[in-house]
Length: 317
Image (tube, rainbow, N blue to C red):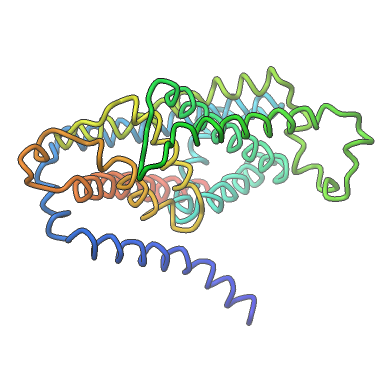
């Protein structure tokens, strides 16, 4: 009974947090202003951008995973990876980690890939994705000083990148140590870390190269989204700050970052967005950012649910 209650609470809690965040947002920025912001979007441009972005991400994600699994001697046709990946979107919308687990389960059920091995490969991919995001922010921070609420974020980003790079280097070197050194009690679940044991520097670099196309889209989407609303955000600022919102949005405290992404985007970009309706004071920057990020997030979630439901029917058979 207690276990069942904890399970229900874990599932409901992220939605409660999201509800609290949106209550705060809509009490601070009126619903009327947020809804009024929608009139400034170019519907054709927005729909075209969302469809192209979603399609590109699906193809790039499944294509890179096909390549990454092949690096560890798991040969699965790309189209099969795409079907399984899209089916996992059904739960990934609610919780990214659960969606990854469902993807690993599908790989076990359909292609007899050991669950621990596929999970290990996916963990390795997530680590590399995090490092890519911070690296892009680091490079961008070298060309532009960004100060938010009196805090020099450029220096914080540079410091975080140095720390993360040191941790990554130490982690890679650790798995190159003699076997006896690595016989630590908590590593008895070594199958879960098998990917890191097998991967050499060249494999890490190959995986990073294959994941780069995804990050080129993820880290620049806000620039094109703003254009759909007739406003402008400096490109270099987007490269510096979007990785922060993506990283915070990835923390599983709300379903797929719903709410947290909006709060962070407003905090980071409200003083950087300009043009269009903002020039005449028709709408406030926070209300516009809230409107456009929420529209984009819900649109992507809708497409994930739609495609997930469609492909789940075939995968479960």
